[in-house]
Amino acid sequence: MGKAQFFVRRVLQLAVTFWAVGSVLFLLFRLMPGDPTSYIISGQMTAEARRQIIASYGLNEPLYVQYVKYMGNALTLNFGQSFHSNQPVSAVLATYLPNTLVLMLTAFVIAYVLGILLGVLAGWYRGSRFERSTVIVALLARSVPAFWVGLLVLWIFGAEMGLIPMSGMTSLGHENTSFWGMVLSIDFLRHLAAPALVLAYYYMGYPLLIMRSSMLEVLREDFIDVCRAKGLSERKVMFNHAARNALLPIVTAAAIALGYAVAGSVLIETVFGWPGIGREMINAVLRRDYPVAQGTFMVLAATIIIMNFLADLAYGYLDPRVTYD
Image (cartoon, rainbow, N blue to C red; front, side, top):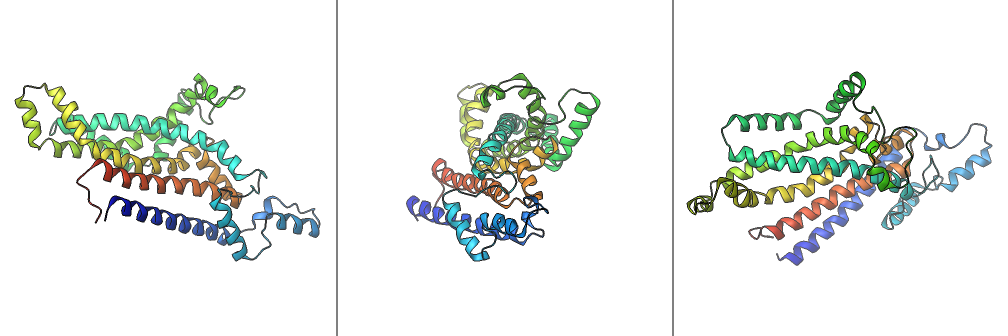
């Protein structure tokens, strides 16, 4: 199988995966107990007014009709109107998604820079106390739930010491002229520090362990001995030759990890009161706001699916030894 055939097959698999995710989301929220209109219909309304509101959201139609309309609208990224705010779901996503991306990308960059650097050093100094300590820290980072670390950080540095804000993205009364003006303000960075560092600690273990393992394999290669025989310094051998060749698994794993990082925002945003898409998804589920819940779930699922797709393509491009059979 050639690259073109592999690409076409992966695109078809991508389409089937999106259809399956969309169908599951549609059925999942319709099977949930409770009446989704209970939050928008007042008990003082007349029966006719209730029927009109239910009809305006299409909830009086048979399930298969709702499904066909839902899938048709999903193809154009139209997830309907929010039951709670009556805003288009696209507007709700546009409000909360940038907040999540700022938090996730900050944590991701910190985690991968530190993880790769520590992984290189741990692999280079194999058998040392530094390697053993680094591996223990990485395993702890991956073993302890991020939300538990977040609660601990809030308790110690927020409630007890008063060093970090307890909740939110900005302080009360802070005026924002624009989104980027807010992101670059000191007040925002002060609120961002704790959730971003907690997430970075959790994500760091993955690239650290992969980089260490990859370094150990590369250091057994003959070209490392050749580099030393040429008289290159140990630092040049470590970073310019060993680390560069050990980066391939990190590049492909980073694409997948980035997708999971965005999807993994739910608990941290809830713990730190960060107004992102993960916290909005939980609120939408609790309010039985189907359109917003489906839209946020779909965005998180699409992030993982697309990043996996890109990782598959990147792996074949970066490593010529990969075959498509």
